[in-house]
Length: 82
Image (cartoon, rainbow, N blue to C red):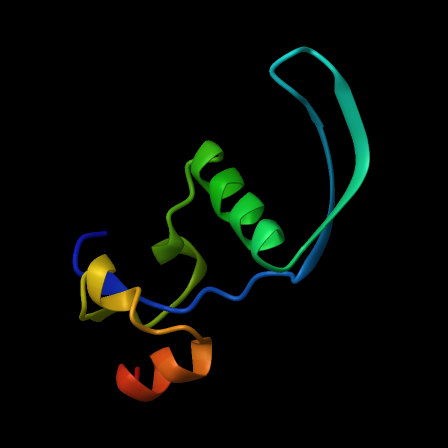
């Protein structure tokens, strides 16, 4: 969604199972923090879900380059309130 942004709540700790590119099965692996967030984001893509499906009140606002300046959810919300 170009030029739109929003906060999507995600689990901070998840357990995943997957088959890697060598065909090796990995089960019950624990991910936390940024890794957990990225896993959930990418899984949404594979399932055809956009972040706009996961949150309400999308705002027109900064592009991705501008968002990289903000390090925390609180800082982002302060500078770009809903």
